[in-house]
Structures are given as structure tokens and as C-alpha cells.
Image 1 (cartoon, rainbow, N blue to C red):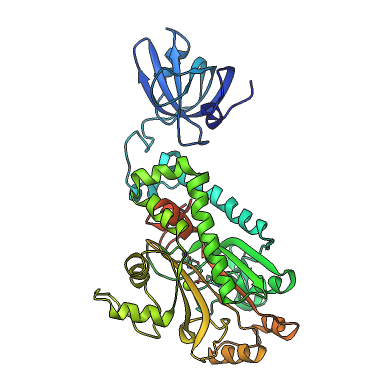
Image 2 (cartoon, protein in one colour):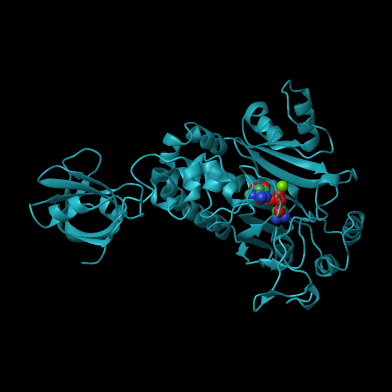
Length: 454
Ligand code: 4AD
Ligand code: MG
């Protein structure tokens, strides 16, 4: 018989003969004369209950099994008289594939997230992390479908780059080795310094100004030494970029995307998301409903700072015009002041990168951040400066070199056009739809300061 997945068996429309499953044993219950096995194969949250009867054969094998070992079970799928499942597998034969000694760290009890981080290679065998990474996979497809439905072309921008998109100097530098020796920079592979990308935006802009609307979705890297629960050194970013689109179009697209992803999680990942709603964040469904059913509030940066200054909340950092909003400020605005997602726009030019479009006031740029309750910033973006002279002036003002950005400036020399885009942190999206509060728990092998064990 061909192998069946547990998810398909649990949805069977009738009894089945000659069923074969392979998976890992979660529990063994010896009922003296017969035994229950719970088998999980990662295809869904639920286990398949196996009944092993008969003095010899299946029963003998079943009671010799331990939590964690891998097995193959063949038999008959029949209606289950017990509560909790419609179907169970009556074992004809059970074969041990891979033994699992008692030193297996995932014995049947609840483990702390901190402990599970130390065994990131084994944690996908738990219910929680199995569910998380099925959700992560489904959400990635939802992102691609969202853009495909709207005619955006998927562009794979480079991971190795020669330019600092954000101009923030938080790049990992590449060195090259030959026969174990680090090469001198002047003889380096590329003939000039190379880095891991912090954002695919600059390259995406070039393609938006050719294909009309594009997006990237790939890994990005930040050498910022911020040891927080929402920053990672390696994270995935979704970056749409559209020609002939202004800041309003950009805000509308960002809002639509966030809402689309929240509903996708609720509707298409309901079994897995429900686990998080029950055990991780009791307010999760409410939070997601709030995102799905409300228009996002739009307010300027200046209005946001005024609201913060008028509040009687004691902030660790005093909100001040010209200073970036801190997470505590973003959370106050979304969770207490507006009680829904908020798009803050028109930030001071002095705290934003060189590529953002200068507003007529000469002080603010056409920037936008989408903030959601519990998370804070989930999206950062802007309308881009499409005017060559303005862009050159900004590059100079910020102490960057025009020569370095020659190719970027070319796009403003040859048929420039208004365009806009944003970056959405994929891990922040996963935190939003699961209620998980630490970014380390939504990445298979997280990279944070001091953490590259695996
Ligand atoms: O606001 P950021 O830095 O914007 C950019 O990089 C732009 N070039 C994007 C663009 O316009 N194409 O980052 C965008 C988003 C943030 O809103 C946040 O969700 C996420 O990326 N992000 C991080 N996520 C996890 N760990 C980090 N260290 C992150 N830094 C940014
Ligand atoms: Mg940002």
C-alpha cells in the first residue's frame, strides 16, 4: 500500500483497508492485552490513534516502543468509538524504524520556550513548533498569492550586495578565504567590499521602473546589536515596489496586505492557529478580528508625537518631535490611543534614509510605518525620491557618496517616475497571527547576538 499522511486519514470519508502510515510515536498506553499508540507525522496538529491488539505481533511491538521513536504501521482505518477522533487505525503490523532512548529531551510534558531554544534542532517535533512552521509555510504562500493576484512580478534580489540600502552602517561584511586563509581586502573576491543585504529595495526599485510592480521576498541581515524580542540578525522581508504609485497607494496596499494575511491565518490555518489562541495568547482571535474588521487609522508623525506628549503615561523615552518612535510609543498609540492598527506617515527627514521623497514642507518625508497592536512596527516604507537633483542633494547631505549610488541615480536620469514601496517583516507577521511574543520562536534556527549554535 502507498503511504498515507495522518491529515488525510483523519479526514477520511469512510473506512479504509490496507492503510500504511509512517511517523513518530508521541505516547504509548499499555492497557494489558491491547495498547494505544499516538502517532504524529507532522502533516497536522492531531495524532493518529493506533490500536494494537493480539498477544503477539502488534501488541508486543507496541508496548516496547518509546516516545520519539519512528515507526511504520499498517492496518485498517475504522470508525473510532472513543471521544476526540472520528477514525483510528487498527494495527495489522507495526515495525520499528528508528529507536529513541530515554535521553530524548522531549518527553511528554510541557517545556519552556527558553529550554526549547537550546534544542532548536528538535523543537519542531513538539505540537507548538510543528504548528508554527506549518503556519509559516502557509503564510509564505499567502504572500505570493496576494501579489500574484495583483499582477506583481516576483524578483529575486541579491543577498550579496555592494551597497548599504538603509545607510545605517549595520551590515555584515563578507570576507573570502582561500585554503583556510583570509584574503586581504584589496585582493578580495569582488575587488571592493561586499555585504549581506539589509534590504532588496534599491534593486527592487530598478525592476519596478521596468516591470511596473514587483516584490521581493527573501532573507535580509542586520548587524544591529539590539537584543530584543522583535529583532533578529537574519529575518525575511517582503518588499513590494510599484511605479506610478504615491504614498496613499502605498498605505492602501500595506493595509490590504496585513488584513489579507490576518484572515488567511484565521481561515486557512485554523487548526494550528487555534492551538496558539488556546495556549499562547487568549486574546488572539480578538486581536486578529480587530485587524480584519477595522479601517486602519492614519495619522501624521506630528499628530502621533502630540498624542504621546498629551498622554499621562510615563514613557521610558520622552516622545519628542525629531526622535524616532520607540516600541513603547507604537504600542501605546495602537493599543491604548487608537485601539486598532495605525499608519503613521510624514516622518522627519532627519531620522529617515536618503531615498525617501521630500515633502513640500522641506522638513518631512513621505514615509509610512504600519503599526499593529502587540507588535508595533510591522511595515516600514515610503514614496521614493524620484527627482534627480533632490536625491543627489540628500545623498550629499547624509555624507554618502554619489559614485557609490551611480546605478541607482541612473534610474532618475533615464525615464524617472514616481514610485513607492515598503518592507514587511515576515517574522513580525508570524508573531501577529500566533501571539508568540519572541521572534526567536518563529524562526527555525534564529540568529541573534551571541546565537549561532545550529
Ligand atoms: O523599516 P525597515 O528597516 O525598512 C527597510 O528596510 C526598507 N528598505 C523597506 C522598503 O521600503 N522596501 O524594515 C522593514 C520591516 C520593519 O517594519 C520590520 O517589520 C522588519 O522589516 N524588520 C525586522 N524584523 C526582524 N528583525 C529585525 N532586525 C528587523 N528590522 C526590520
Ligand atoms: Mg523601520
